[in-house]
Length: 138
Image: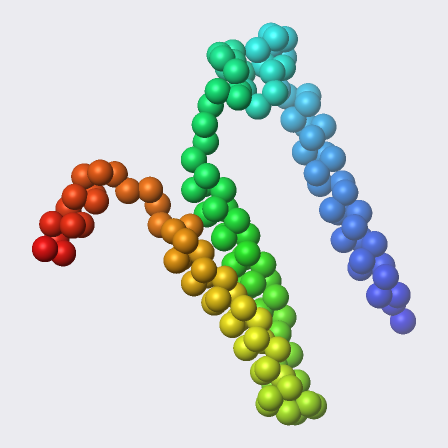
C-alpha cells in the first residue's frame, strides 16, 4: 500500500521548487542597471518628488477594498458549507444546518446596508452628476 503522505510531500516539494526556480531564472536573465532611483521604495524606478505626507488619497479606495475583502471571505466560508449542506441536513436537521448560515448572511446584509447608508459603496460624484440627478427628480 502506498503511503498517502508521499503525495503531500511531492506537492510541498513542487510548491517550493517552482517559485525558487522562477526566482533563479529571473535573477540570471534580468538586466542589471544600478541606479539609485530604482532602489527607491514604492516608486518603480521613478525619482520621487515631494513628500509622501502631502499627497491625499481618497478614502473611498480603502472602503471599496475593505468591502471586497469582507465579501470575498464570505464566499470562502459559504462554498465549503454548500458542499456539506445535504449531509448536514441528514445528520442534524434543516434548522440546525441552515440556521448558522442564515445568521451569517444576515449579519453581512446588515453590514452592507450600514455601509450603503453611510455612502461607503457610492463613488464620489461630480457636481455635474449631482446637478443632473436633481434635474431628473424635478
